Length: 253
Image (cartoon, rainbow, N blue to C red):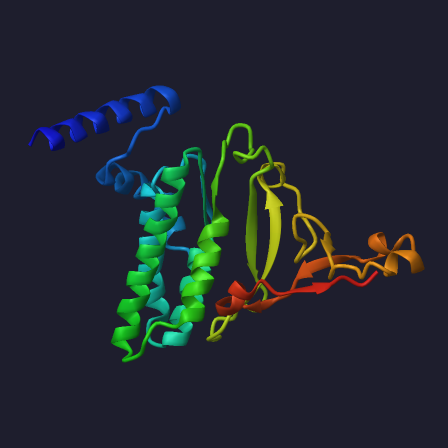
């Protein structure tokens, strides 16, 4: 008994220190729902393509609830066909972004969002007498891990001092009667987003990607070989269920 009491005391002390050091507070679910039921916000939650950016995501209280609402809309509008559901559920997932200062919170946020997605998807798969697809789950993991960033929203930097980076997942063939969706990924820093900067479709954070390692003797044939072996790359449009492959192509010129 004394061990568990000490553990509880330690937890309280830790919680107080985190509040003092980081201003960490947890919003009760009923308050989250009241806030999300406000006019305009409620409508945005029901719009699969409307984006949300939570600057202090915590463990994902707001984002998880928005995702849950969006997933219910996917079932309502696209639940009759599992392929449509898979595509539109990933589209809904791709619209939710968050920044969280504390590492353990950001990891918990990622896991909480994945759990909501997985359980909703599994329920639909069972309903259709099918199994969940690995490629869909892998794509969901990639989207969530790129949309939830650990860092400081005020400085716009990640813990390593580099800019916080997000990926936009832009649908390129969104049709009312379509079963599948293609998206093109473009990377933006948080600064880019807040400053309203528009980048070329498919542009990664940096154009230069190192090609295969040069053979040692190539250097003697061409002293500028190393520079010439750098290629400008961009993300290509792919099925949203295939984004986990992170496919890129060389940019001409």
